Length: 312
Image (cartoon, rainbow, N blue to C red; front, side):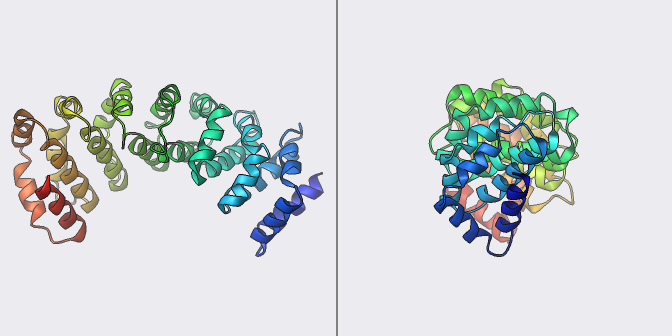
């Protein structure tokens, strides 16, 4: 079995890999691969899971064949096994499956994939940084399709709980993907925004507005933009939490990144769509000089935000 799996792994990662995968589908070999994921042998499990990573990174039909053969459930069961090398490959494959389409995301959820991810998150300090990065990336992929349709409310609660365990991890990539997951999750639904507000994630976000790399600052402010997209209640939460004054301090720095300026303009625009008192809060935070300066900027990104702000 090991020789067979090693041959498969070598062939599907070669120049003709996609053709080989298609031939595997034609000869019903996906089931053989999935059955290998159930064998209690670490070497076999590793080779089988690694092959699933490659296949799930292929085209939609190839990923579908893997899912139809039962790979989602078999891989989810491996995410929390003691052998972290196998578990990491299994999670990587699951993340690739989730990233392909909403229907595959739902298949993973039905196999208790979110439960497995949250359980792993509880032990985040006991796994390697590369494994933690794969986990955070999986959360980001899981949340990406949240409007096609929404993830069930109870599953979203679990997701938010798991992300909460990652956003303070001491690695910029883990932190970045955890923040992206919140961005994707909060983009379309007031229900999800309320879950984030109740989860204390905003408090953590508040603490992150200083000292971050600019790429993660962008995602941090993007979360606030999405929260402020909601009704007056959510805009008031942003104001009452002191975010506008934090933004005012941040954008007053000389070396502020353009992506941070862009997201800050978006946020101010969303707040300005609120009540008179909420608009006044923008003035009270001292943000008007920043807005005037930013809207004089000729870069494409800020010009786009300027156009949006003027039409709000």
